[in-house]
Length: 472
Image (cartoon, rainbow, N blue to C red; front, side, top):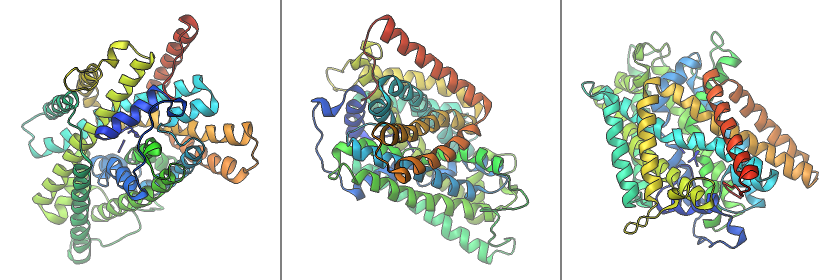
């Protein structure tokens, strides 16, 4: 999950995180920076996107999505997939115009101006900083359900310290480890699906298959569903990280866009499938009443017993707390390193370890900040943290669509109204509705963060006369 995540890439792994984030944030590769080697095929990038979206991502937040949607979790992920398709189309258009490693802020900087690009990137930074926190909270909640004697925060501290150590030492996640993790996640999902279908067909307690998880007319409310989508869209964050691979793709103009669409289609189908089956198994939520944090694992326990609860919980903990969280923390440290090197943040963040050749100051800072945020925000629960994370991502996606309209349709006047006006307007409508459905505290925190970024930019740019860039 992730660019990057949204992130990430928000959730880029190992060397890819360092190279992509550095070129995207610290400078523009089309102005003389070192070029990256073009080796990635579309299938490579599809795997990359699937890894960061985490095929079993709904398992970690299922309880919140179920309750917020009125018992229609599958509908939430169906709508979420549609919302992300329009966003992927806008990404594809901008990648074809500027096939460089980067993210939303790189494209808004080029299409709308560096000031707007900076504020967009600063807003997305809220997402970057809170994504690892969410990963650790979800993972620690899963493990705490298995070992209730140990408080969740203790698991989170262990995860943060271990991943920070790995970041400083520079032992990144390799491509083969990522692929093995992806295969294991899909196997866990397959086991759940097979046992769930068998239970629905054969168990006398089962109510059988129903359309209710997709659409229940007795509980359907557009506002309710979109409120749940604002939580469920978290599971899709990370597909946009494929945009950071443009300079490493064999077909830098078309390959990333195709990979985005394919990975969204695959993961969207997997999200809908697992939440639909879970919704049929416990249509009223009775299986996890009083324990929404471990909702999916309790549903799995109904069809497979305690061992399936353990398998799903451990798989979620490993996927979120180690693989994705490590990648997210790595990406954040590289982004802060590149911003420090470019002068947008304090210079010490750009220091390189003499032995390990890693941005150790940025890595230690991210580790310490993440630990503080985990201990502070952890008590709020995954649902609340998810909404804070989504503010940054959804705001950035809105600016992505605005960039397509502003650059192609207004500035270049190319006349392609369907691609460069109608499609991004559809994206703005869906993403905007989802953004509006965020809880008030999430919007307040996000707007305060945006205001701080604007003030920071104005002081550096016009007070100290310094060029301030995040990307582009």
